[in-house]
Length: 133
Length: 77
Length: 121
Image (cartoon, rainbow over all chains, first blue to last red):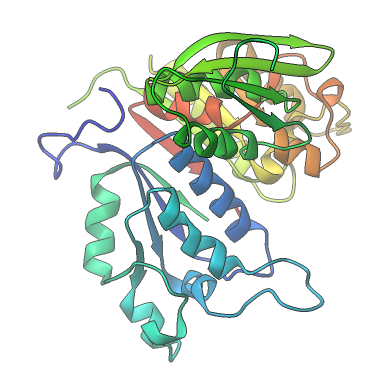
């Protein structure tokens, strides 16, 4: 099946798409940055991609990161830039955001979609390749 | 411009996936039928560029590697 | 139910620190024994370290040799950028492993029925 062709039975057959789940905070390990790099590459190759931020991964989208001694750049801004590469939205697990006393207003300006854990379970079940970072 | 290309992308010194990201951006600026020349020294580009062309429907005219420099000619669909 | 499946693997862990590399290796062997196809293994982030031919492991399994063995029948690709950032050059890689870019990953995703991710800490 050509990548990008929708599966007729999305509940029972994996859709030819990639779901990247960002579960870790932006600093402390390389995972968030490397996941971003993979997302950028997959979008450039026009692979159908969905991106979800869950658990501590929601912290990747906080505004105003990356300034100062770390010299690591503003990763939130970089994620927001995925929209210009064709990613329609960044999905955020609402329970995880609220559990960290955060709201959409704390996050970068980007097309965000709030989802719940049931939505995430469904997405995982429907996707051919789930890559957790 | 030595190979009849309409534009040149110099991706020398860039590491994957930057050459492909820049390639995708550069192709957006071309009209259909125009040709882009890409120079890259990231070894992954030798496989990445043809895969990108196949996936996006753009026409890979040629790709060569000499002394570590990869030269690709791509015609926009 | 599916019969023969085409699998791919992304490995995010280096050797000996976590056991993702071992799990990836044993999954591959088990899948091949059961008649499935292993389309490719993409070594990403610290995963590139598993293919360092300079690994010496007295009295223990040699993970580089394990992945070199897989490379005979399966396409094992180490991410070139991840290798660069870790000081791994082409001539340090095991014989049956190649450096590659995201194009190799994309091709694998396209050709597989399922892709599994191992490691990541």
